[in-house]
Amino acid sequence: MKKLIILIFAFSFALAAGSQEMPEHILKLMYTSNIITRFYVDDADNGKITEAGIKAMLKELDPHSTYSDPKETKALLEQMQGSFSGIGIQFNIMSDTLYVIQTTKNGPSERAGVLAGDKIIAVNDTVIAGVKMERADIMSRLRGTKGSEVKITVKRKGINRDIEFNLVRDDISTETVDVAYMIDNKNGYIRITSFGAKTHEEFVTRLDSLKSLGMKNLILDLEGNGGGYLTAAVDIASEFIDEESLIVYTEGKSSPRYEYRSKGEGRFRKGNLVVMIDETSASASEILSGAIQDWDRGIVVGRRSFGKGLVQRPFNLPDGSMIRLTIARYYTPTGRCIQKPYDNDSIKYEEDLMHRYNHGELSSADSIHFPDSLKTYTKRLGRPVYGGGGIMPDFFVPIDTLKYTKYHRALASKGCIIQASLKYLDANRERLTKEYSDINDFDERFDVDEDFIEILRSQAEMDSVKLEGGEEEFRKSLPQIKRQLKHLIARDLWDMSDFMRIYNRTNDVFIKAYELVKDKKFEKLMIKQ
Image (cartoon, rainbow, N blue to C red; front, side, top):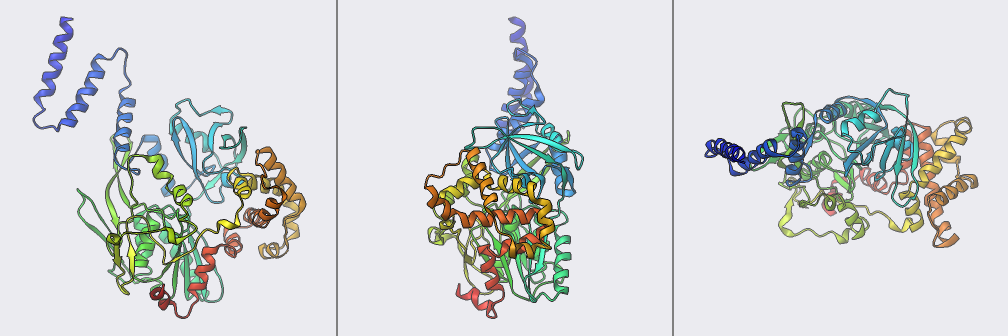
């Protein structure tokens, strides 16, 4: 006992010697770490304790400050810079369970019917849920040689059985400008899915190609674009906005204002420009659309964007791990902060989109109200715009909730429609490729037949989707179900550009964008809206 008292006294004295120069909270951490090391009943894993402490500290700050261990850091950098072979998902791990956040467009997982919200519980019959497996180890199991097979087992909300998917790994390309085509002889369309290291280069190639075909006006599709590299957004904005014009600036308590301005001569500073956004367009997408709106360079159409306006700076730690710490906020040229409000409830923050849906925002602009304190005015035409939570489009396009019955929403949420399309395609792929010469021929002549519908009904029964409204509800659901099934078949048989030509014909945001971009009184539309 006497020896223990002496050790505690010596330990306290050693810490006190440097206490005059150290903040109290740092000293508290040092005290805690040393007490655990010296006096804990068993050998403590100081590395795990430190990582847990870092994660807990960052969680108290904001939803976007994060920590990644050395393996995770390497994988994250690889994903942003190049390509790899895998199953094509973005995921988070919560409570030792892997949750699918998003599937890569046209990747193995999306094609097979894996959905956002699915929980992956096993990979090749090895359980990964509830066993405290490291993130990097999970990623190594999901990735592999192109063409190799991997089986994943998922749990899906509302389905009482495990679902197995046999996937073939493929190159998960970081090509981010995946679709570009001429709508007619004057108007072009380009889609950007995210902002990576090569996005500007890819965009310029696509833009120049369309201009060589006679493009005079452009629709830029940022729907579903969750962001990425700030510099990529600035470089693309420079193609539209006059040289030396402010694109975005960042500012924080310890980060003085830093401005990003338009550079170069710009490839598309004349001609009508319409930008498509929706509630999942975030970060760099909001910077680009916000700059175009603030300078009155083009019209923004769709629904209010996500509202992610925090700047993360990577801090590399000696062991190869990394902290991405929020150091500043983004501000558009008019001084709008696009970050939506947040607190320490990460689940509530992520569920904001569901909250918007439940409160009618996605179906009616009348439910959106901005206080006058957040109002500012565009740089050239002096139009009122608002900050404090995403980019509000100039022309709002609602989700038509009347199109979709409760039965249709249940089919979609449980993956029945995707699964039915895959089963039909597996049985009919060879016939379909021989019968239809191209996607336009397919779009004109293909119709979802009774066999296809029976496959869907069987899938719905397997997944316990009940038709509460009887055959009347089914008949009401059928037009949208058939359209979605047809789109899924087209997507899997032809490339993405061909598919988007067909899909956009029924995309309400695109239809409005096309109506606007070809209007001869384009600038007056901005003033009148």
